[in-house]
Amino acid sequence: MQLYKYIDKKNLFNKFYLVFASLFFSLMTVCVKKIDARINIYELVFFRSLISLLITSLILKKKDINPWGNNRKLLVLRGILGTVALVCIFYAIRNMPLSISTVIQYTYPIFISIFAGIFINEKISKNTVLSLILGWLGILVILNQSQLANINVEIEKLSIFIAFFGAISTALAYITVKKLSATEDIFIIIKYFPLVSVITLFPIVLGNWVTPNLNDLVWIMGIGIFTQLGQTFLTIGLKKLPASEASSINYLQVFFGSIWGVLFFSELININFIFGSILVLLGTIISTSNIIKNI
Image 1: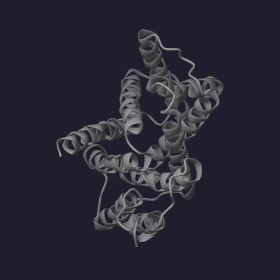
Image 2: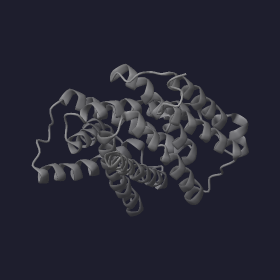
Image 3: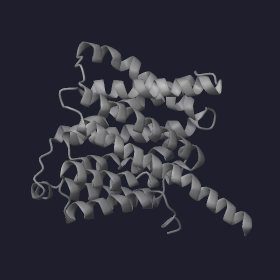
Image 4: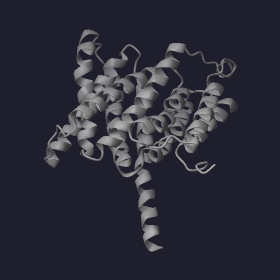
C-alpha cells in the first residue's frame, strides 16, 4: 500500500510538469498576438527559435553533453515537424480569436491516439473512435457560422485549415519526442527543434526582413522565454508519462487561452463555445482513458 501511494504521488508530481507547460505555452500565445502584424510569422518563429537555441546550447555545454545526439534522422524529423506546427500555430493565433485557435490546436491529442497506434504500437481502441466523434462534433459547434456570428467573428477557411494542419503536425511531433525520449537527453531533443527552424527559416526571414521596435522586442523575448520553459516542462513530462496520458493534461491550455482571450483581447465566449469546448475535452479524455476499453 505504501509503495502504491508513493507511485501515485510520483505520477501526480510528473503531471504537474505538463500543467506548467500548458501555462507557459498559453502565455507564449499572448505574446504572439500582441506583436504588430507588420512582422511576418516566419520572423516570429525564427526569433523564437533563435532564443531557444541559444538557451539550450548553453545548457548542453554546461552539462557537457554531446549536442548532436544519437538518432539524428529522427531528431531532424522532430525539428521539421515542430517548425511546421509552430508556423501554423502562429498563423492561426494571429488570424483567429485566441480562444478558438487554441481549441483547434488542442485537437492534437485525438490525432496522437491515432498516430500512436500507427507508429508506436499503442492500440487504437473504441475510445479513439468515440473521441473522434465527440471532438469533431465540438469543433463543428464552435466553428458553426451562426455561432461565430453571435460573437461577431469571421474566420477564413484557410485559417481553419492551417490551424488543423498545425494540430496534426503537433501530434506527429509528440510521437517523435516520445520515441526519442528513450535514447536522447531532453535538451538534445529540445535543441533540434529550434536548430532546424533557424536553418530553414533564415533565407525567408532575410528576404522579408522587418526591423522590430522596442515594444515588439519585449514580446518577442516573451515568446522565446515562455516557449523554452514550455518545451522543457513538456519534454520532461512526455519522458515520464505515456504519450496519450500526457496529451490529455495539456488540454489545460484551452482553459488558459480562453481566460487570456477575454482578459487581454476582449474576446467573447458564449454557451456554444463552452459546449463545443466541453465536447472536445470529453473526446480528449476518452481517447486517453480506459472508460470503454472493455465494452
